Image (cartoon, rainbow over all chains, first blue to last red; front, side):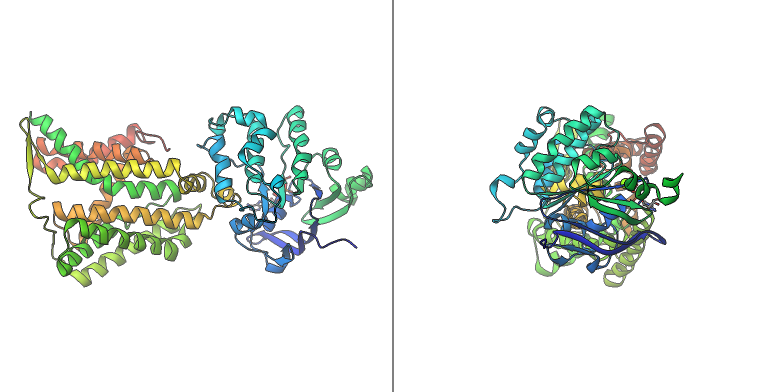
Length: 248
Length: 285
Ligand SMILES: Nc1ncnc2c1ncn2[C@@H]1O[C@H](COP(=O)(O)OP(=O)(O)OP(=O)(O)O)[C@@H](O)[C@H]1O
Ligand SMILES: [Mg+2]
């Protein structure tokens, strides 16, 4: 029998005002695991991440983290408890340098505890070792960076909040394949620190390769889940587009 | 010499406006709140200060030492109690909230202090002046200007180089991204408003030393702060300072042309600045 998941959602429903975007989503992540979350545009992937982080109102029991109901807590509380997020579209702090963007996370993120082993604590120096280009450009304003470099800042910023679970929303979007490789090559190093990863991806084959387990969403519901290497393309296509499309 | 004198007096007057404008620029830069009650809060602090000084026979420095923490607490409570509930993407709720607050504060002041004008005595400080090569320079206005420069530089340093400043810039740039980086925007806002109103506490003491104050004076002071902030580029701290100088000099020059024109000239320069450079002399920073 497996241990309790570090993060899970239970019949999570959420939406924007009168519009319901998620319908009873059950989702779980175990410590140190890499989970991919795939689905078409508008399936509700970002909404799920945002609901977990407390950016959308949900009931306490809908989100459990390290054994406690935490749904609907303030986002900054979630972050300080150990849930990190690389938001969709990077969302860097405009007008601030690379280093200042990172320092916000050091200043306000989770403070490492005694039970965290020293090797798993992220420092700005370790981020520069992971992405050397950021070290070279540390004093530049973030809007002068390329898209890939900005994504590295967004990932670095999230890591510096010392997450136990890191939610990454489409970190490959809009980047050249070479840059996507560069970023995905860094993921194993992030895992070594013991951080569990949730990867929201549109690129299904990339998601399958990078993850151990996979969830597929369609119209606000989970339509498929299983081990990434054992799910076939057709099964994914059906879950991704819905049964009707798969038959056509 | 007449114009040099106007320039000097204008810059000195600008020092007073800079003290009003600084807190407004901070609040606008961080929260996109235009605090309509800004002037009324200053008058409230001025009248409170005058009453405190009379009741406990406080000197200028001790009054500042008492009034500033009180002002900070007022700002913090105001943000936590009211403005944090109104702040957001849509600027209208906070505009309505501060407008309501402005009226409430004015009425409260009228109840407590009646419509009389009052002022502080500064033991001769308010009338002292020195002759600098034919231009008479008031000692108090120089202190006001130096204080304004120190406050602007200090606040600018806090914003650029401290932990709180980074959190503030992050929350100002992208509230949601700041929140998912561990920043509590509401707490940043509360401290920002505490700082803004604390600065008004200092401005209030100087204002009641150099002129008289009465409960209905707030809106006029609001306009000066508002114009300075717009001329300078909304949200920029040094921009607000420069805007205050422009406004002060415009009023002083207008006054030299015709004593009735001073204030009007300031408004005209404000409108001209809005027409020519709506983004302000300094861009947001
Ligand atoms: N701010 C919002 N207000 C109203 N509806 C929204 C908002 N954001 C998303 N939605 C709706 O919620 C649904 C789920 O959107 P969501 O952004 O979670 O999808 P997604 O799976 O992340 O898509 P993508 O791959 O395009 O990022 C969509 O129907 C979308 O139109
Ligand atoms: Mg999305």
